[in-house]
Length: 288
Image 1 (cartoon, rainbow, N blue to C red):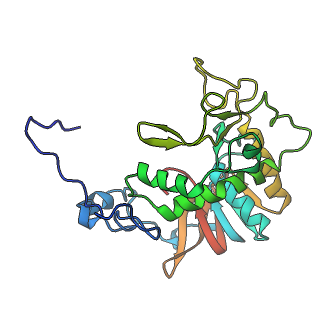
Image 2 (cartoon, rainbow, N blue to C red; image 1 turned 180 degrees about the horizontal axis):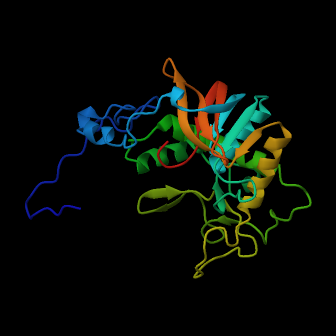
């Protein structure tokens, strides 16, 4: 980070609307893909480090598969996309680089607001518009308000649906197996500190280690989140989703500016064409 000499002025921040927060239909930051006004376009162009995409014809295709929805990456996010699409009756193919034997999901908690599960425990009935506003404030209003609004107002429903997949034979939702990340009992929400608000809404699946104060451990050492994701995985298979384990995408195929599928390489080094009739979802994390 460059240090400024005494008396030297810091560069000005991008202008904000004088009238306060931006309207609900859009943030004041740069529109998607338009970084030129902020002098960043050249830097963004350099992110295309792989260079030009290879031509589809350069691959020796050994087989083809087809589905309504093709998902690249079956982690925490991709799995939920597969579940939602399959439940809506779509045919689904998930391309996942991990083998079926090594498949797992990393993490130990899920954040949500106003789920029935947490509301019954005393963490709910929040003003969701107030939460959306706080997220936007924390991002200095240079955020995608529509996306934040959707997350905040759909997350409770998502959590309740996911927990409904836990079989009655499992004890993972017992009080000694999961807990809510919160302040001490009796705290009223929103809790305000330093001018910022927070709400208790994170359910932690820490198994036998419900509190980790002063304890160092690797992620997933005690977590039962992979078990929960496993129930969701089984449900996708039950609904007909096809998982291509041990496969890695080589190319996103396109036509008329629209993604139409993937070319993937399987564990044996053979190339497959996977066609998407309705859509391709990139869910690989990092740069997608």
